[in-house]
Amino acid sequence: MNPSKELIIVLDFGGQYKQLIARRVREANIYCEVKSYQTPVEELLALNPKGIIFTGGPSVVYEDDAPMIDKKLLASNIPILGICYGAQLMIHLLGGKIEAAEKREYGKKTLLLTQSHPLFKEVKPASLCWMSHTYQASNLPKNFTQLAKTDHCPVAAFSNDIQHIYGVQFHPEVEHTEEGKQILRNFLYEICKCKGDWKMDDFAQTTIQELKEKIGDKKVLCALSGGVDSSVAAMLIHQAVGHQLTCIFVDNGLLRKDEGDQVEKLFLEQFDLQLIRVNAQDLFLDKLKGITDPEQKRKIIGETFIRVFEAEAQKIGKVDFLVQGTIYPDIIESGTQNAAVIKSHHNVGGLPEHVDFDEIIEPLKDLFKDEVRALGKAIGLPDYLVQRQPFPGPGLAIRVIGDIVKEKLDLLREADFIYQEELKNAGLEFKVWQYFAVLTNLKTVGVMGDERTYFYTIALRGVSSSDGMTADWYRIPHEVLAHISNRIVNEVPQVNRVVYDITSKPPATIEWE
Image (tube, rainbow, N blue to C red; front, side, top):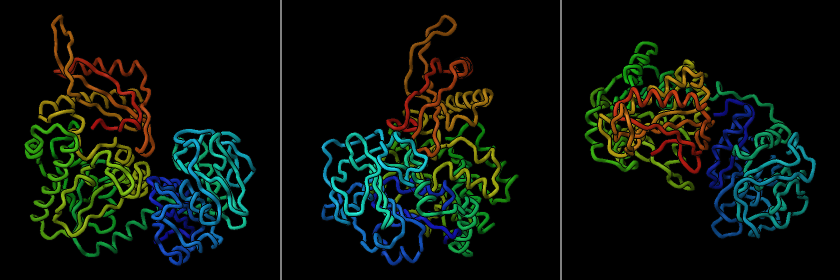
């Protein structure tokens, strides 16, 4: 259902950034849908899109199994922007030539504009762009014009104003491309002539209506952790079907300090939700006993979560749907057809094969974290909830390196509480995108009160990001870090050393496990 009169289609050719492109379009206040390249051209045209964006992909256009489209789409006069593979495909289909580049381009390159064009309105003549390709255009078809180049890519951008076809070899959707948002905005507003009449409120109301129609009069069970994602998912369902929703909050013993009591109080007293709290600390710790591999931890936690839900579902009668707060970065990192597994998320890759529910509903699976926060505000959740720190589904199990025992969890809870408290006192609570403490499995020699110690090392992590897909380490002032370190080693037993993680994502992930 399109709540807007304007529609942009993102046509997916296997690119891992398809949803990031869609997100950029939605940021520009234009409704967007992602469709497979296999969608019949008649179906695409019937949607009457204002424009179409072809994604990148891992294929080579002239290979036998390369994804193709009906050339009718290129003759439709609908403005089309091709990115990477999508750009090469249009050149290939219209008589140009794609060849392996003499020098492959990966990473940041300087983009040099060679022609004035609406696609590059208000874009600097030279700017950084993000390249990721082995093949590129060596010969453009008739009526095509080169618009930009790099030192090793003679056709970094092109246009065919007669057929309204445009292409870029680089990736304007990623943050590494300095003028990427402006280039996409130019395509949407200067070329497609969009007005930008779509807001997150529209997405919220459309999603709620779709959930009403899907669920009908059936019962829904929601996995509520109290984090941003599950809270927004729960409230969407609640606004759609009211008391047909039962929320189950599993206190697995892997939460932050006092978090279980805070979640129960919030949703019982402030929101009219049916909430069941399950105290399963001993069960989870028993299942995790002796487990040190992070992937095993995630799988065990996912399995145990589902089994607890199944047991609770049997107590309350027939339950047709399970709701989860899965968001798009979870799906990407858990591995898709074109993305390698980075880590399993307990509500994606960690699910057991057998789940005792008719269907799982994931209303946030196409959204990034900042969009989930915006959606939360749109449906009336308070700022203090939607701005909460991201917290992984497996909880502190992946912030305690090595085996999991209650004593280690308690140490980490205290250190993490101090870290959170001091960043709040320093006015950094909402400036650092995500921050947390990690109990490493490393013991080091120290000295306290003239005596030798051999205690744990706590690592502090703080990052800046917008979507969790990439992140840079946050430059917390040294005096703040010094105060945090002093408090932790003095107030948390069995800890004698504090370190700060200064690694970005990539190459690291935000979490340590």
